[in-house]
Image 1 (cartoon, rainbow, N blue to C red):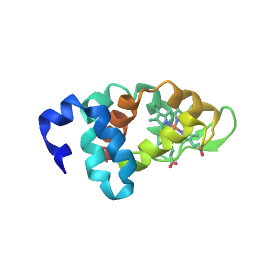
Image 2: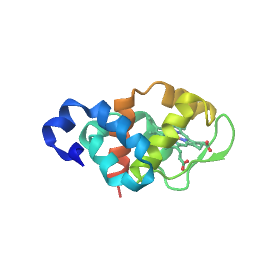
Image 3: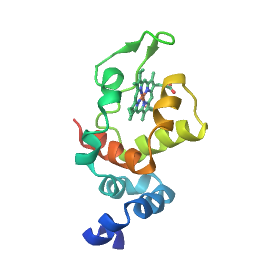
Image 4: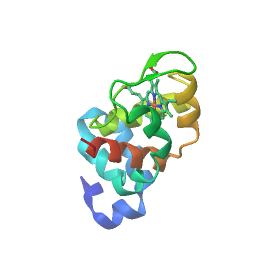
Length: 117
Ligand code: HEC
């Protein structure tokens, strides 16, 4: 896939993300490369409170089990965040969180969490 070219990747991160989004789960590894895990690391401060704690349950707005996303497939994380952002999937906190993220943020965060063990 030509998307592996470093220059292209840097110059067209968004384009890479869009093309990978259409490619589905099969290209999870490519999706992770589209996002920058290093950049994602600086963007997850607001996620850690809920997703960083094993077996954590939210107290607000209702007691709810928080899914583990560390080590999750990057494509899956991207899809989930986009689904909340577009309203295809709904959860009060996640709708607000995802709505505040740009496509690049989502790609970076997905890459970060996918590489987190
Ligand atoms: C206040 C707590 C809270 C915060 C903050 C939060 N989340 Fe979530 N997140 C949840 C809960 C609860 C769910 C499950 C909602 C559902 O079932 O739809 C969820 C679901 C998800 C999912 C889907 C997981 C799956 O297995 O389907 C992803 C991906 C995700 N969050 C990523 C993030 C990211 C990235 C951030 C930070 C930018 C973040 N969340 C911030 C509580 C939170």
